[in-house]
Image (tube, rainbow, N blue to C red; front, side, top):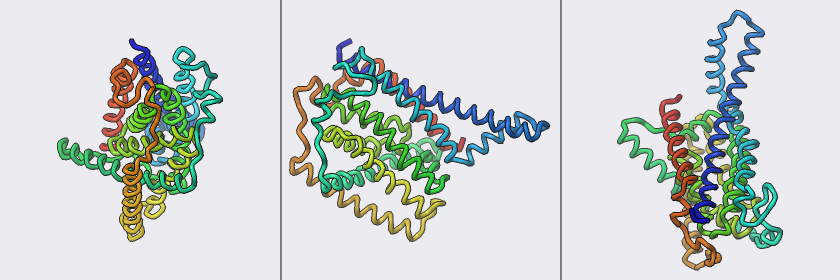
Length: 342
């Protein structure tokens, strides 16, 4: 294998490791919860059937989506992500010897620049049309697949959010998810691949970010906003920018709709807010087109080993192919589980 193939194959295996470990940990935590639930109820009522308790525990966890989300996501956030970063940053695959969680030399940390307030607001506005366009593409493809299969394919994330209280959505979707997703997909993935070409790194990290959601509805908008977040991170080298932008995007995209309509029904407030989102998205799209036409996109170093995107060695290697296959299986699984309410 070429050095590029080895480098990115290791990335693919690292991401595969993350998916497997996070899912295994989530399963273990759920089993521990079921055991504790059964133990407490058996202690209070020794005559009850243990198999009935397992069934009751499953119903309980399904009816408490916030608890389910916390139990299944926290092991991935606090255990799987740190271990994945350590595995990814193995000394054998480092371009420059760096300790554990570090992907930048002291000099490289000084390269990033600060965003002005106007730039920061402008990038947030850019997120809005990208999110709207991406979610529309995902919904359209899901509709086509529903017609072809004769089954109504549903959005797992929307279903999960609709079953949580606004404050629960705020914690899970607007605080925890942006922090840990930015650490893994911007800090780690871009940090690991950036020296091989900035645009390649931005595109690849966005693609991985979209795929890991394992959801047709989320892939396209996650991929599109991932490109912008990666672009901002490459410029600034400051994760606080992308975390806060990610939080704001999720706040307006997930928290506010639930706040206006906890049961997901259509009312005057949601209609007005949808219209407001459309107006903001149009403004953001106009500004984005103007930004591109004016030639304001930063010209990154073209002398890197991978100056553009789409290099076959980046994607057609054992590690990445393994990752792609696992994501495909997870997407099919989550789609079936969500569609049939399992």
